[in-house]
Image 1 (cartoon, helix red, strand yellow):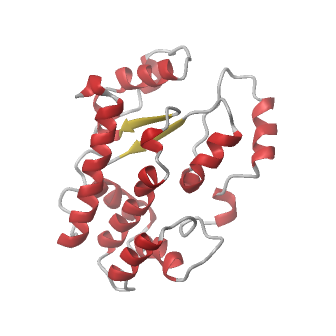
Image 2 (image 1 turned 90 degrees about the horizontal axis):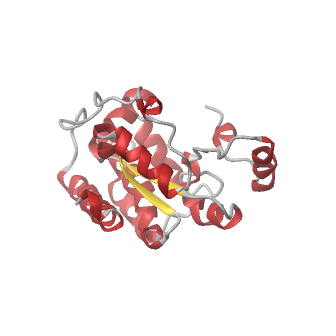
Length: 212
């Protein structure tokens, strides 16, 4: 994979392209730019961020099936090597570095590595105080899968856009739920990730009391 191709272009160039689009609104999916969420919100004044989070076991299982068994280790290595221009190591805190150094090895359990990387990416939500930001919409993946029409309609409403109807949710299915429930994770890493998942759930229900 060409790393440069998955990075977002300079913001002024992105804005130029967006202005060419005549659609009512445009959705971007800059997954490798989560560490730059505040910069994106600051530059694109009328934008919202949709933060979708998912159970770490299912994420780890899906990630390694799609990208290979060592992908989690590959994702952590740039942090170990302190690569300054790699998106994986951008904005990682000292505390997070300590966590990675504590558990990392080239022969660590593959799912441990994938779960640790899930932790790093989702811990950004709180380090950047996105839970306090009114322009950040939280979406619990499992809720979206189980109630796609309701969840999508709510997101459109928050963004002050007309919901086009349930046709946009016809390809959403629940086959991916709980597929990672039996993956092999070390108890310590499971605990760290589960604590963050519970914290995300707490923030989600606080932002969305109607789901409580």
